[in-house]
Image 1: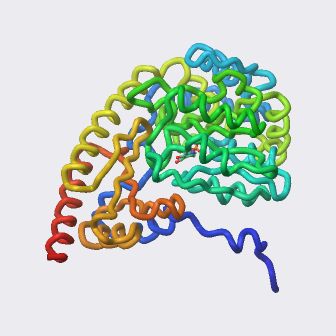
Image 2: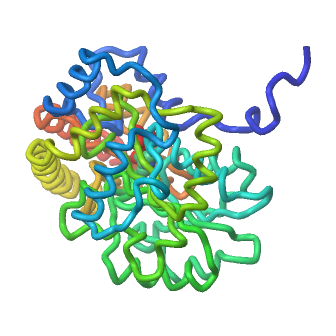
Length: 389
Ligand SMILES: Cc1ncc(COP(=O)(O)O)c(C=O)c1O
């Protein structure tokens, strides 16, 4: 039989992170600073709510849009926390993580050939999911602007075929975030060209140095913005697979159409647990955040001291140091470090071509492992330096 696999899928590259970590799987005693998920277990009150829902026999489908109790809880939570106004009936959809929300959003707005702006380095799925939806990702290199998209570069990238932009802050892989003024400057370009802004704010609650400002909360932006968020990162709930999309009612209705045919609904146990997270997990979430902040300070300080120049990220749990001084490229550096010191980091190129010369280190790892891993990286750098002499 011929041509079983579609051209689109055949041409798609597997995720650079996956390819690298397939290597790691076969090795023993590795310290992995590669994973993008909390090292914490979901807080107990949330797990208990999931267990209790099963004990009570909640095992059915829910409404396609998600449990009303969860949508209502989210509507109240977003209002109280960010002054965002979303109707639980029409403007909120519960999704299988931000991952599904992103896919639905792109499929809902893209006509074949529409362009979607993606600032890079970026989360691995933005480009491929845009292409799967029939769109054309337009990458903007942010490495010379402290990894931030500037209004000037956005203006330059936009043309008649540009339909939207994917903004993600705090950003995976760099951890940078934007202040209100910077967001307002971007929003003026977005409004001028009537772009749809798909805003992935999954790390919003893990912002350390200033207040996280949701894009949809800026003046005039609610009607242009699809706000994506979820429980994976800040509530340490990656495996429960719960996210949510908020936006104008016609967009949410469009997304719900695809969701009802492809997914039906998010598992009820996870939705029950997520509803509980909104009311009773404030304290453990704050504790996790404090711990990430402590680790961030340690990792940034250590990396800069050993000569891997590293900006201070304002959120998420990643740092993105430059390894250019070593003379190795990102993949060589990561492979050599893995082989010689058994420390796994992610080559910057996994996040797009502009990630060349960088590596991503996740500090969602216990302090002891971080200390040991950084010692090993230091030893590794020492050897490279000596070999050059
Ligand atoms: C920026 C970003 N968006 C979305 C996701 C996926 O999140 P979820 O678990 O909610 O699907 C990740 C996971 O690493 C991420 O880093």
